[in-house]
Length: 373
Image 1 (cartoon, one colour):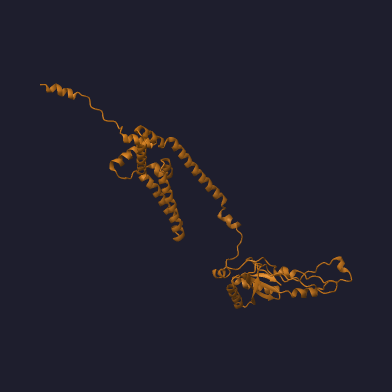
Image 2: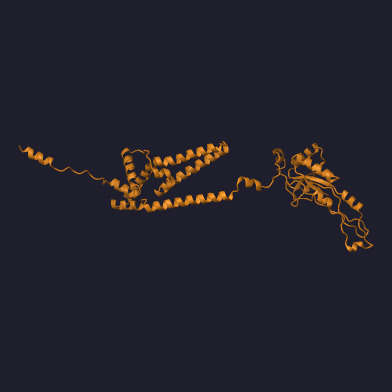
């Protein structure tokens, strides 16, 4: 009979409230994470602590902006590894895909897109696990260095990522994106369109065959010489008071690099106007017949080139001989004492013959520059 009141008293007792989540681990996690998205990370950390293994999850912020998320959470070592992996992947794609395999642009773009998906997907899947490991290390250091738990939590709170840090990180990322966009726009503005670039490009001489370029590789450039037409048009010096024509100055022969020689025009020199003193009885002008004879005594040549290697000079000389051209090889000394081999074709009696020989030399893939002596 005594049991009923005891049973009734026991049944009327109010239910005991459930314990609140005030564990030390949760408090330490909250202090280390900061106020940004703390609920998501507490749930992920609880799952990782319960299993004791690295499990994949999903972190949207780490997937959309991996570098910004790593910098915001102070994961500097992981950020350096991420940057190095991106640089290595880009270098491998450019070297192997573009240089060695010569893949088409659509395939290169597809590979780049696949690499971008991997670069964003991996931080999104394992960002929580990476942050969990870093937070655990920081908690261990803080607990070991602080004398009390409250001081350890204060230390973790000072090291945590705050909303102010989030604002600075977002502003820096936006500034970098804006700078990249401005640099790209300036680069595109500085590059002319394809049509304008082709219209403004200067006309280049036709390229030589590979075999000819190999033979002319060691040819040294020389200053441009006097063209045949200009040399033929220079009148001879006037006679001095009956003593005969003065000796003609020798015109140095040189090689014109790659520019084609102007067409040779065989013209007679125009008579030079005599000064008033030349009309005196003691002096008389040279007759036109004598001027023509002096112009005819000039020798016209076609310079093929100067060669530092005698073997290349001999090969060019042999090719000219096989083509029926009167070729010669001369040794020329430079100012520094170095000996060069000059290959030339000639001499020719008229400008028409010199022009025909120059055209034939160019058909062989060699240079042809007019010279006169």
